[in-house]
Image (cartoon, rainbow, N blue to C red; front, side):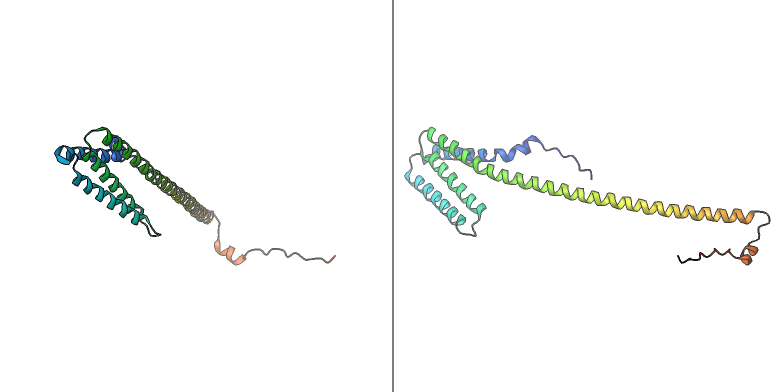
Length: 201
């Protein structure tokens, strides 16, 4: 009935909220490192990133299409496509303004998509907690009823035992009286109750 009190460190609670920003920032940093190592204005590298980003977007479109579409796979493919596009622009561009602009846009989109999943997860968690609390209340009610029933049975048994003890004490006390003859009572029998005659009116 008493649940242990758990305390989550603030860093553990903040880690899922920081994941989209960390992912887009990592892609931007890797793209700029790639830019510094010869990808700037390289048409071949840009073409490669365009092909990879287009392929990932196409895979996401196929994964989300139809009745049996997998939303997780589609989301992963579209995220990979966006990350490849951001890395390609960060690697190809000579300035930092365009990569930063795309980084801000990608981060905002990532947080927008993540907020939807966070809300769904929160709703499911709250529904589970309410269901669990309701089941605990039901079980606690059943336990209270059973405890009351058991207590009543114990009290009935105690009162029966007390009555038997009092009857035994009465019989012992009566047998100890001077001049008491149990055989005389047996021979005399119990007196008969007078019968009630019904009179017709």
